[in-house]
Image 1 (tube, protein in one colour):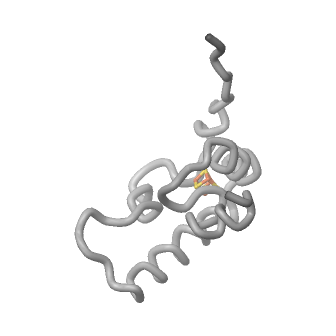
Image 2 (tube, rainbow, N blue to C red):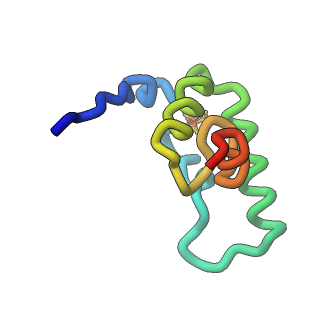
Length: 84
Ligand code: SF4
């Protein structure tokens, strides 16, 4: 059996660490389309100045992360970029 090593040390420098982390994922209750757009825009603004954006995006594409904003991309955007 082989174990794939994935370096996640970059997460320690993530701009989304802390109280704003919730806006990167859908809430547990119903979210209106306009609320989703606003939440995703706010998350992407944080990503735009994140020092580890490239590492985060590469990681999310590598593991085919299905939920949330990662590396400045939504789930749908990651599927397009990753071709999956
Ligand atoms: S790019 Fe965005 S989601 Fe990724 S670590 Fe930075 S702030 Fe968080």
